[in-house]
Image (tube, rainbow, N blue to C red; front, side, top):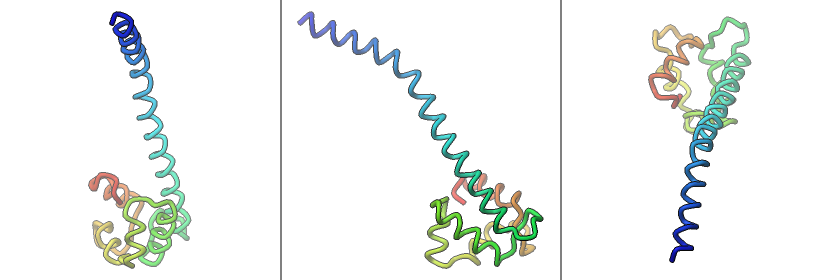
Length: 116
């Protein structure tokens, strides 16, 4: 009856008030999480990059992937499990000079929709 309609109306009004504030926050939280993960990936890259030239060799790439696998980033767990380091490196090393720069890595992530 009328009581149910009233309750329903109040519920709908409340929902309308609540929704706009929850959506951006959820999105923001997700973006924060992605940012935090990427900062960790950046730190992993830096620690694999022993000489600090912002690029890693094939050997260093292995420890980079293993560190990323720890935080379950992108395809790193699969790469580690399948020992597909060489294939992954070749895919990421866009100019084929046997050195993976941070820039190359980021470009590859971007073109693959963050699935690096």
